Image (cartoon, rainbow over all chains, first blue to last red; front, side, top):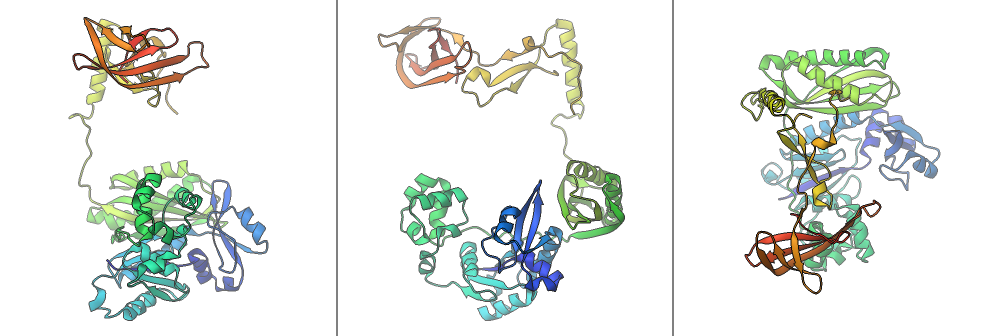
Length: 392
Length: 94
């Protein structure tokens, strides 16, 4: 398998610059809110010492004079999806695991692009100018990623032949394994992939479990992770601006329902229902809110979809007064299967309970018990489960 | 919010599962189970495993048990424990 990896460093910040070119020369930090905390999502490249997900206060301690931008996740995702659409015209196997990182399967493209230069040119044409891609081509995803990481901004690196010498000096921190394992490697005095590759797999497995084998394989440039191309299903996007900013749940729900009307006007005629949708809102202070709702069975009408949306809106409060509501229908489906009760009759369990009640009325005392977990983790066996009378 | 069913919670209606059953055990000189007396006397041919649990030491009746996974002369396997507080022997699947 030959894989091409495209890395778009500082993707969120570049999306902001694309929207407002004046930001190009100003140091800026893109922040997002998690609960009551403000965290760093991205920053302009000239700012040093920052990390993803670090608290904003800590970032401001490094760089006091910066512009703060509120992350607009739906916008970044939309830009990224546009990019994936464009890349899918070059190769059908396109995986976008996270915004700013794309893997492309390039096996069999030789008939269209006779050499790597032609392929790189085609890929470069699909990427908007605002981004400076780093591109890597190698025999698997891990190597392609490393090659891209080690290529200059706007440039590329192709890994052919002696992979071991490329990997030898790379730090263990590039391994896509848990932080705990990386820390443990350093504790053992193992700091480079070359040091890992020199070991036997057995001791690594003994220390790190199944991850040890993966660490050893990756350090030798072996990675059999398959490509997971995204669904080619067409998505529908609808949005509406509210007449005035509001915190009223009813007003937001009405807006969402109006979007559902538009969606069902299109899909209803085809006998389709919604399998998955993403509801998003944008607050007046530019904060965004987004939730994806999966439907166990396709929502075939507005009522079914609206009731789920209402529950989600109630459970996950808005970050501020809302001025725009949008909906992206990710997956559609036909009402093919109906999930039925284990009992042949839906109300069988009700009948069963009624029979048990009758039995207890006649014979007295509980007659039928249900096994319940009490402390299933307990070391004392009799504390783990208990029998409780049915229906209590 | 869970709706109040109006029923009174009665702990006496709950039944334990896998409660320990008293069993007569003959000990050897070192205190290990040598034979089990149920319907008939059966000699312990092997002690395959042994472990101890100490729990709830903060309560008035702490739990201190020495479990034995034994094989009897008939080939039957049994989990026994000696209650280190009362000194009694019990049978219980673990």
